[in-house]
Image (cartoon, rainbow, N blue to C red):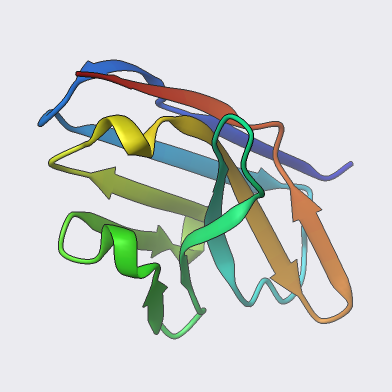
Length: 115
């Protein structure tokens, strides 16, 4: 059974930092891209950052220079280091795992940034 489980969300003051983790289990072959998406109140889900198996990264303009995505291929785990957090970063953050013809999403973890 495939599981994608996020952790690390919480409440932080503006300017603070959080690190999110996402671990995928039950996937035996060929994870290619792992990424983080977010959905703020009243907004559509949007890409935050993703990373290929080879380590190529893509970031949303709004987080460039503040967030860093990384992954451990041996552990099928992806991380999102978030620095200089702003109230507008408040959202539910979702992990997405893709490979070949499959796509899996986690249940999401809440990040709340207070001003």
